[in-house]
Amino acid sequence: MNFEKLVGVVFLLLAIWQFYAFVKGFKTLRTKSNKGTTAFSIAGTWYGLIFAVIFLGFGIALVLGGL
Image: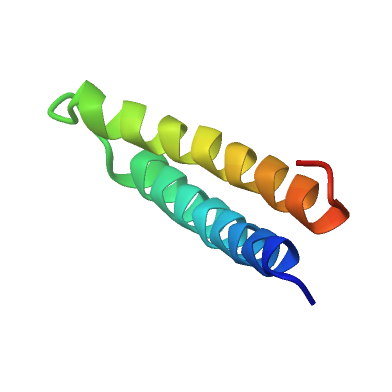
């Protein structure tokens, strides 16, 4: 296993963790948010999903040798 594939696996693990954090944060926002909830927490939740997709893309590309 070369270094590129190892980094790809790390990115895939980060993507899985980020998807988990997004789902957990989204469920919390849906159940406990009110008028006092700031837009920053909502934006942060959605940016978590964007980062998860980016990490997933990099991970797949590195494991398959595309980059």
